[in-house]
Every structure is written in structure tokens, then in C-alpha cells.
Amino acid sequence: MRAMHRVFCAGRCRHFPCRRYASLMQRLSDENEETLRLFILAAACIGAILTSIFSLTHGIFEVFSSLYILPIILCVYFYPRRALLFTLALSVMYISQIYLLGYAHPTMIAVATGWFAIFMIIGVVASSYANRMQEKRIKIQNILKNSQDGILCFDRESEIILEINPKCARWLRYDPEELTGNTLARIWCDNTERERFLARIRIDVKATGETEGLFRAKDSTLLRFVLSVVLVDGNLVFCSIIDITGIKIVDEEIRRTLEDLEEQVKARTAHLEQLNADLRREILERREIERSLLSARAGEPHDDAGEDR
Image (cartoon, rainbow, N blue to C red; front, side, top):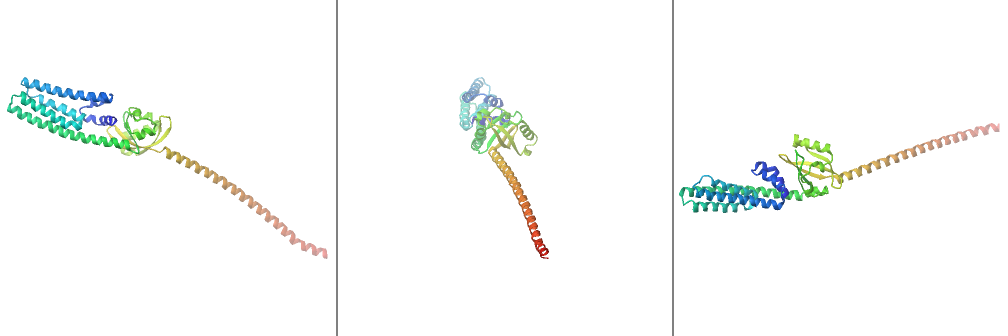
């Protein structure tokens, strides 16, 4: 799930206001990431509450309400399934402060009620969208994990591998974590094939089609893969991979067997042709002998008649 989070953040964070956070999360362990999330969320909440208290006690009523939007957005981003309850609790706290510190001013209560509605709308809409995105990520993760084909995701500009599913990693005798963050050159050993494939992707993805490549496993075994581009999102390229090494070996064995059979057939044909030639020569010799014998027998009566005379 963490690996999928890194891939999703790399492709989507340019549309989200937390791009710097996404790049930082990639360098942190899971425990530190969770701690940092809670710290950021708690700091945003405490900052909004303290600012509200200070503003209400000093007669500043224009700014502090908008500060509650930040912790709501952060909660939606960090914990989308809990964002609705968090938004409700924070909104209740906000309007309670208005009632307690706003001296029951009708205008302030009316404005606070409006902000309460705005907070709830933001929480409901944003959490709904975030939950759908999370479900989509989970589905994609399950597809990557359970796919019978290999799945590879990389950045087409830097050629950095961002995600590889367990199936493809097993073919290459790696753990997925060993390849994540490395370049394609580590596993795709044929530079010419790789550069040609990347050039076609950069020019026209639709014209890429299927590409056959020579890959090197962790134990230096050479493997033949067929790559098909299934999705391009910005610089992210998702490829479906099929291992055809076994098929290639079988094809090579069949080819060698056919060549051996062809050589045997040629040798047998040459032998039969030689036997046929020898047989013809023998038949001709026998016919010649038969003609000689017949000629000799035909001349014997004439010789006997001459002797009688």
C-alpha cells in the first residue's frame, strides 16, 4: 500500500497542494511518516484553535474562520475515511467557541453558522472524492498484486522504476523493493532496444505496440520479455510484461529439431539417390550382359551349319 501511495503521489501531487509533502514522504519510513502526519494535523488544529481564541478575545473577527479549512483538507488527505467525523468535531468546536467567546452577538453567530455549513460541505465533498480515489488505488493495487502478467511502472524521462508487481519481480529474481528507485538499465540490458522503446513512447504512445526486450535477472540469467504500454499519465508509463523466455527456448528447440530432421532427410535422400544410381548402373550392366549373351546365342546355329557343310 505504501508503494502504491508513492506511485499515486508521484503522478497526482502536481494537482494537489501537498507536492512537497509527497516528495518528503518517499524518504521516510512508515513509522516516521505516520508520526509526521499526526504532528502536522495536530499543529494545524492547535494553530486554528489558538488563533480563534486570540481573535475572539481581541475583537478580530474576519480571518480566523478560514484557518479551519487547512486541518480539514489535511485530514481528508491523510485519513480520508475519518475525515467526515473529524470535520464534524472541528466544526462543532469552532461554533462552540463563537457561542462562548463571541458574547452571543447575532451577526457573529449567523456568520459562524454559515462557516459551519461551509466546513461540512468541504468535508463531505472532499472525503467522498478521496474515498473514491482510495478505493480506486486499492483496486489497482490488487490488480498489480494478483495479475498473471508482469506490471512495470516507470518515469519515461528519468527511466526510474516507480513500481513493479511481485509477478514481474519474481521473474527477475528480485524483491520489488530492490528494483523500486533504480533505472530500467539495471534490468533491461539491451541499450539499443531500450532507447528505441523509450523514443517511441516519447513520440507517439499509440504507435508503440508490443516490444520484445532482453532482460537480465539478478542471477545474470537472460530473459525475453514482451512489453505493452497500457497507460501513460504524464511522465508515468505503465507496461504489461509477458515472459516469453520459455516459448523462445521451445521455439529454439523446435527450430533445431527441424534443422536436424532436415539434415537427416537430406542425408537419407542423398543416400537413397546414391543407392538408386547404383541400382540403375547395376541394371544397365546386367542388361548389357544379357544382350551380350543373347547375341552370342544367336550366332551359335550359323556356326554349326558351317561345320556340317
